[in-house]
Length: 240
Image (cartoon, rainbow, N blue to C red):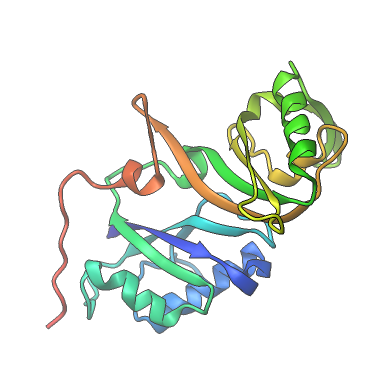
């Protein structure tokens, strides 16, 4: 059994696909591509696929991740280096595999390991409004909100989850302002939509893109492919 981590993008109309539907797309595409997967046991076996942090419906991304398990006892008609190209032929438009790596043994799951995400949030407000809003957020010692969780009202302080905020001015007069935010994911994820309504006056989003996911490991900050990569190069020959 060979664990593989795949990095892919999600852009265009397919951003309106839910996380559950995305899982179905991946299962079907892996089957079409004839990737030899390890399956669960039981009455209805499913391929062993583990996704990272769910991307909210309607958001785009430059860096999504999925972990799969290859069945080493079944022949594969292509090398691991060819895997991204093979998958891209099977995946629908808007999803593109950009890289993959073999995982080291006992690599923590993406859900456990990712500590923050960087988002580009295109907003409707002017640069002056966004700059003033940013200052209010960063100067706040706490940003307390109430939300429903499992039928109960809980109180959260969002301020510790806001790592950085930067305002990117428009290149042209007709362009929108972009708020680049690094938001924490542990012990819970702070979503861009929650951030925008946490401080008045609220900001209105036009488009949101996840730029990067980060993992803190041994004092370094790494992307998930770097953090999980096996230290020794692994090769798999084509099936004869």
